[in-house]
Image 1: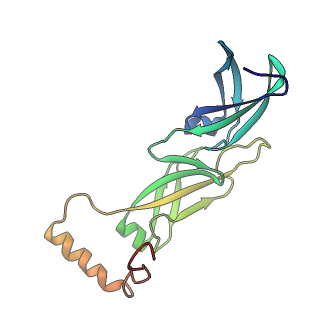
Image 2: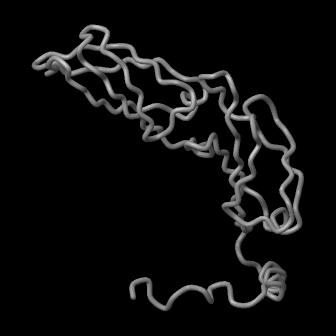
Image 3: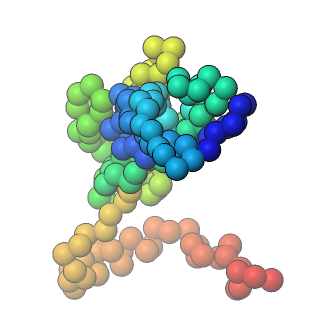
Length: 182
């Protein structure tokens, strides 16, 4: 139940697509033994943990604090820094570099993946992301996900990937401690 000067905190679930365009949602507010629905606007660029504050239109002394929760998407995510596209690449594309046709908000474009790109590397395109409140465009990021072949470890594949080991300088795990806890 709301009292004068009260604050109601409400979690609002939206999709990644909703964060791209902004969305109007109908939410239910409990008020004692009854509840009522109101319409709220979640702005473009909202991400999990974003807070939208507004006055309750039916009770001017009540402040609504909407906490945004963005649902998982197969290849898109949104963070404070911008819209992120998970981009799978082959071992060869990551090692040698490649120009890859990728989706964007406007159309497809060619993304240059530099040689020796590691998995979890972010490639940033400034001003190609979500349109923000001030009408500027946020950033669009491509998170590189290096994928190994999923056809199974044939003898030829083992032989070819074994030859890659010669190109590593030292033990990749040398900096890891023997135990996680001291």
